Amino acid sequence: MSGKEGMQPSPAGEGTHPLRLAWHAVRTVYEELFPFVALSLLTEVAGLLLLPGPPAWMALHEAARQALDGRAVHVSRWKGDVRTLFPRAWRLAVVWGGLGLILGANVLFYVRVGWRVGPYIALVWGWLLFIWGLAGLYVNPLSVLQEDPSLTLVLRNSVYLVFLRPVHTVIAAFLLLLSTLVSLLLPIFLLILPAFWATYTTLLTRALILDIRRRAQQP
Image 1: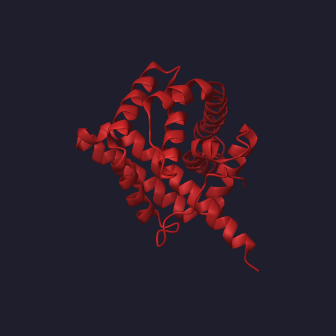
Image 2 (image 1 turned 90 degrees about the vertical axis):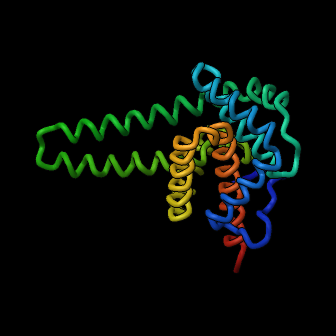
């Protein structure tokens, strides 16, 4: 796995602990609260408009990466990133979403088919769909962290992270789901939910990559 030179390890004591990284993400969003509120709202509107949705979401991860590196977050920079990342973000969205639809279609087919082994085959496809969904946590962060953001490499490394750090991935997915539920109960948090998602997944991805590298270098 290859990361940008700007990647820095998490503050001492945080390591790869999902809860501590979540708190670090909260602090980072709070430090750039007003720009992140603006970017979250713009990203949500872009998602409703569909066409600018994927590049807006990827550009928000780039803004999160900049904030984690100690740089200021600017709406104007985000707008420029949306234009720059437009083709890459849509290629990634089409391939990742398309493969997810194929996996889901296979699950439905084998659930409904009358074969005796159909449910067991559906279970296998279901697990593949679950793993693919978890890998989605890493695709945008890897797109802004890797030196080589090629589609194949991003998707491959996303799946690798799920298998190499399954516990971290499942806990992170649970925390993101929990943050979404809290935001639905307290809608004020919807103003920063996209920024928290982007910052947390980018921070987690960076921490896991650095940890894997460190362990690989140990004798």
